[in-house]
Length: 386
Image 1 (cartoon, helix red, strand yellow):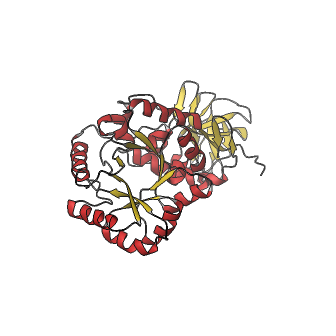
Image 2 (tube, rainbow, N blue to C red; image 1 turned 45 degrees about the horizontal axis):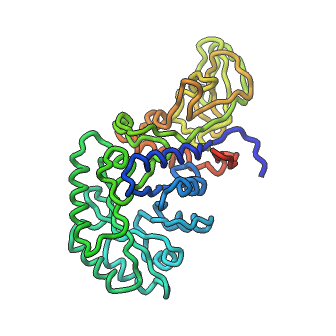
Image 3 (tube, rainbow, N blue to C red; image 1 turned 60 degrees about the vertical axis):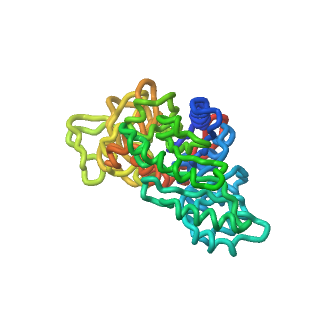
């Protein structure tokens, strides 16, 4: 397929490699890295990210759904894959056949799964323990014992791991995380035999609390170079390298006289003669209308988007005449200036006190929807273009 449109999302795979390498050097030698590649690798391209993470030394990939795991298998990924979210019982046969690890939280699920697992297969399971997130997972020793009883009573299952998830590890106060960790370790101690892979830390905990590292940490949003919160950003043990850049170019430039309207509804009106540039990117590409007045970078200078953002185009106010074809950076660095993903998130009002949630929302809602149409796709040594 030939591609001509200049709008593209560029992912620096070397940045992902470096983030994993630096985390591994920071953590105890006995701790492994599980690379979280759910939601199309947080919008970065799941297959390329998965391959890169494995090459960088990650022992396992983590996704949210069986569909994501099967897609990786279909693309030739043979590494261990953990489905972290809840799965219907019907997935047991497929997961067992493909060697995919499944999260379980109650004994009844296991009982119903036994007859669905094919002869000669064993379903690899990780027991999820809810220590304070309130999402999924068992909460008491009785429930844990029931699960262990079922697993020990059949050859249909292989107990591979146990894990929990911190709810507030990206916040300044460590008390809630301390309580969660203690609850988790108390229940881990209740296993008759400790599971092979015990893991608790997400990106925030992995970066702030190496004492919680255990057998493995799950490296999610920070694998892509983004701090989980503003607080974590001030406490980073090493520099995170951002992997994502969104670029386009000036497609048209013109001089408008004073009092000219720009865009649908004429929501911007020139106060004097102004140079206006048109960019070939709009809300169909994820540039939501709420990003009006958001600044972009041209030659290292910030310039604002003006007028209503159209479906496939938007307009920017230029400080002077600039040539058609000039590179434009919407997310990323140019010279000494940088526009970070957080800036978009803040402008869109995405959970202003929770940067991790902001960024995941922006990736899923504003970047991912038209990734398959952001035209260019290429692999090179250090990056790929979606």
